[in-house]
Length: 565
Image 1: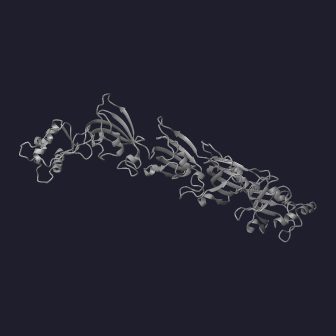
Image 2 (image 1 turned 90 degrees about the vertical axis):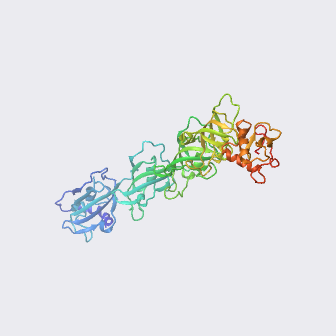
Image 3 (image 1 turned 120 degrees about the horizontal axis):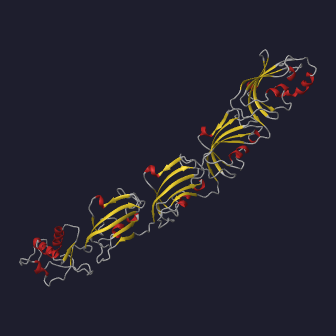
């Protein structure tokens, strides 16, 4: 009806020139509800949308936009409304409510309008203003919150992820990403968004909140959008920027803390152990190795981790800390990962490198103290006594011989310690101190051991306290002096032509006491001698006779003369 009434407004004004005077000279305005906040008032030239109920003075309703379900939309002050309404809504705020009483000469005069408005009728409009905009309006942005640390802002061609609540200017909600529990993800400046939103997002920081007000011609214009956004509606968005990147982005490394001593940097093919905290760009936590109390272990540069992490782990030092910012095309892309990492998410990792090694690494040995005189050094099969402290490369203490207040005792080359430490303990002088770095393939391997993480590089500080020379592999006894011409006669103490175990034991112990022979260290001497006797007692009658006695010569004359009897 509103459009039909406007058609006749000009002719009505002409007729009113000869009308009888009305009791009302001008419109009467009752502002019965005024919002506390009124950032803008209706002026001539503004476009408005409002709901109304129109009645005569006797209360009879002649029209209602509420009943039609469509608010009235029009331009103020250019003759498209009846004059009384043009005057009556001047100065209104959005959500303000007014009763506007319009005299006949400012309405439909003596002619009335059809059958619903009689001649000379005073009209009463109950109006609520829903929207104001002007063709000269621009996008309005108000920053509600902005992080202090804002290193980067949205630019055209960036890809953004943001949450929003969308309402009409009167506060009527039409859509929310929060209710969908999913951010809105899109490019900026490529026409994927309404123009007003593209303008409103420019310059935002991750974590920033903005109110963005968009006039209809930069929103959905004359057609509106669906059933929720009517034609010619200003839109208001409460926006929180969650994420930001550009398809051309490379990974970013920040907050590096590099140890003063960095002998080696990681390269492709190295195996690395590191701790990390993982968050999204807005600080949302998604994973942490610390919470599992276990490092993340992987090869570098071989595709076992996301490409951005693979690249970021190259060139690091043991003990280094760094922050890594990885764009989605170098992480989990548009698909994301599980429920914690959404699609197109930028990932932030704070990492701490615990250690790394290469499967081809040897044992690293550095002597810190070595006596000036060093005539004898440890070799395989020697029985050694040593003190040690064992730690990870990041300094985490694991074990120490001081825990037991006694030195460790072990036979080298007998598989009593890990291979790398066994190698590191050989060639030492008494009193020498060493640092021995053992890679995991010469240590406890991928499985680790009690108190030792899997694939851990171990650092030993060792000090040799003492050692006893051993015997070659497979030997129980070696001669340290020349043999007599008739060994059996020397052994047959009572000269009865047979040597029992007791006589054999007395003979061997006498050689050891005189420094003429050496038993295999680290085992019970009596048991060793018994084993030697059994070897020589060929017929197992409990005695050794001359015919049974045989010797095996060791070609290594420097370390052993003859094998056991």
